[in-house]
Length: 156
Image (cartoon, rainbow, N blue to C red; front, side, top):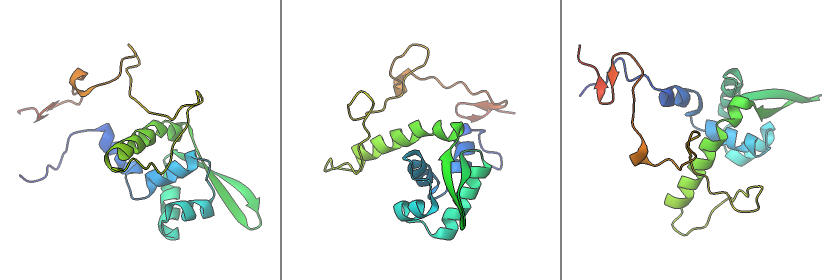
């Protein structure tokens, strides 16, 4: 089957268009950890400098990061998450937990984040209305985009 010229309207696709490029989520990881200086980002991510500069510019332009001057001579900047950037942190935490469970057969976690309660963080997605943990079998998709159903485009 050929690819559709008009794929399903999707907030996931729109978000990935901003943060799905190689290194973008790793930039956000480091900035959320407090490592927002360019040399720290290069060292901790391993991205080529030119690609990293492009990703940083795009994340700033998208309102996910801010760029703040910390040295005038030479001019150097530190990147910090905006409110929108911090709203992506739970995505990073969930990805990290998934990787720890499914890609680390030996159980050797490269990083443990400790919650303010003193325990290692084990993120879960909960429903804001009822507080229950979200499980796949409890979800029902309700497409809101005109002309779309759960299975694809509505018949014309």
